[in-house]
Length: 294
Image (cartoon, rainbow, N blue to C red; front, side):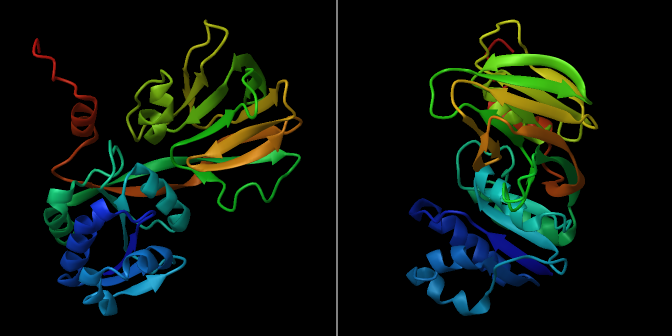
């Protein structure tokens, strides 16, 4: 099995997890490739030097890869998606970060997780993405213009709110007076959108959520729409520009730009072990059921 390993930022407290993963992979029928920048950041560790010769590196992925293992937090998985793109390579995340809605494999469960993958004890959860384009066209906006979690428009260089004129399938919806607006996939419903009062949505639902950020018009509430809807946004405010973000990637747009958001024509394949479920993750991460009255 041809396996890619991706890590975004190497930190000393994640060394034991990295060592454990590489030692386990070394004993499996894997042909392992480590992302080149991540490899460079860990190759000087004394404990890694003994096994470094057993691993190749990659700069880009292709369809010959059968699995990508992300080691870090949810942000690392979001960055790993920019390597997978539309290649349909299944991905699983080992959590060395904090909350971990996407990276669900804990440090003490790496060996069992890899065994389960080898034995086929898992299922694939297909996750939808959102794409962005602008009018006028801005080809250099993002090299990879799709987001697994959310696309957001946010104020820039000002404490004043912005106005986000919003249309759905070319029909005017409303103008949000707010710090910004989050367009979230079901996968992203447990991220930025949730922190701004958005609903939690089951990962494979055919939905998109519009969640205003600190709205001034207090009757503005999150809205769940069909994921086939095309969304158009026009931003105005005291500044001449605003920020647009795709997951962790940020760019600046002029106020005369129209942002057009729609469903991507491909999905990301997330590996879910048979011993796990999204509902179980919700209970654990949001501490549901921890109230002693339950």
